[in-house]
Image 1 (tube, rainbow, N blue to C red):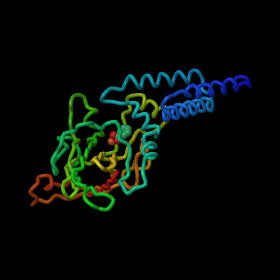
Image 2: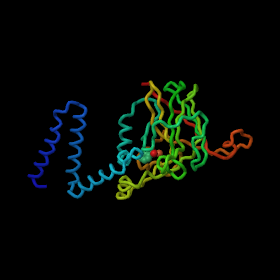
Image 3: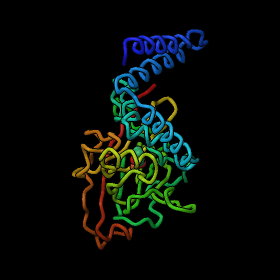
Image 4: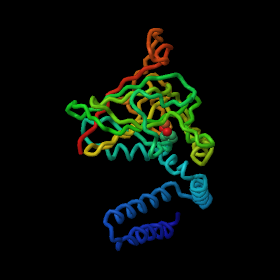
Length: 287
Ligand code: BEZ
Ligand code: FE
């Protein structure tokens, strides 16, 4: 950069930031000024070339084009850049609630409601796993009537919504009972790659990054008067813990999935053969 272009760059940045001076919303003004400042700083720091700027524009175009109501590639980009996990961390409160992590792109609003004890796997490939959770407040009191959304991938690492057609498996909603309990049959989670057939995958390959997430089940807990908990339970011992492609793992969310041998005398068929079991206590904070 010449001295002249440096001072021109400085002037452009100042004018671009000042262009938001009349914004009626103070919050929007703060966000846009800061975003503009940091975007300009970034371009100056790396001396962004015309080809690189155009490649960035093309990349965002491709991200928009592959997105649909079933796939949000922008969320995936946010996840892969660590922005989603950072945003969760920024908004965390100092309370006793179960720690949160990324929502991810495979949550579906309005999942089918099941009774406690139901099998949500619906034929998905995977090892049978019995999940039982309890939900209590910070004082240890059970919370009944919590809407608990659960979703997970199959043994091939795919969610139902990633298949063609209207597949529905390993996904459901429960209500916690009077003792704050929810239980269901699911399948053992496996480590899986994030969707890599779009710009997100292209980014990972171009930068020699792994696309793997450690094995987990997703949970979203909601009840009026309590702060929502959006989280996962991870499988202890998973080799990808500590190198999650989306930086979502947390020590407090790592659980032991115990292998249970079958009990021939059990009345429930699934209990007669070997399966996995997991138990976890969730805590919700009052608002
Ligand atoms: C998931 O856990 O479902 C997920 C999260 C972030 C990116 C891709 C998948
Ligand atoms: Fe997931």
